[in-house]
Length: 243
Image (tube, rainbow, N blue to C red):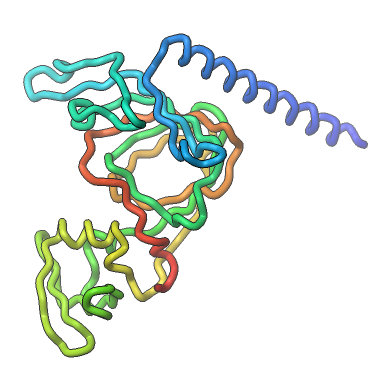
């Protein structure tokens, strides 16, 4: 084995040792602080992730941090109602890739995050169809069969049934909810691209951001600022595939 190979192995072992020590130290510190924690996929043989809540705060017009709670109970893995409407500062510990059979998912809140240890690779789905479908786009629906978008504006989507030409209007929020629940799926394949996030990587996304984690260097730690709950979790049955 040459010098370059030896150096590469030593460097890899050093990184592994740092990652392992960081993970152990962070988990010990957060448990010592007795922070509220949610386990994502707690019913699975191995959870997908853990979310440690540092604090929750509510922004008001006159006083930006009037409401602040450092500790709050989590019952049955669910946040109390008064916390759901707040901003949350959390440590997110990714443990493994998302479940492939679930496909891409959206989030209940807009969020910003920075990777502080480890890395992960995600598949991101072009999701503009959730809010703004284009004129002429075709969709499959269980209730109406195949439909075609006629037009849209900021508040509504007008569409027609391909089978008989019957026209209807759907409120844009209602369209969005149906898309997230898998009741509306695009016929055409959507653009899917991969993105790798390593240490120091920063990202900000809206709630309807669709992605799935497919690989990474786990456990991966991120520090995230979550906005108030505005939606439910969305699993549109992998919209990157044809129905």
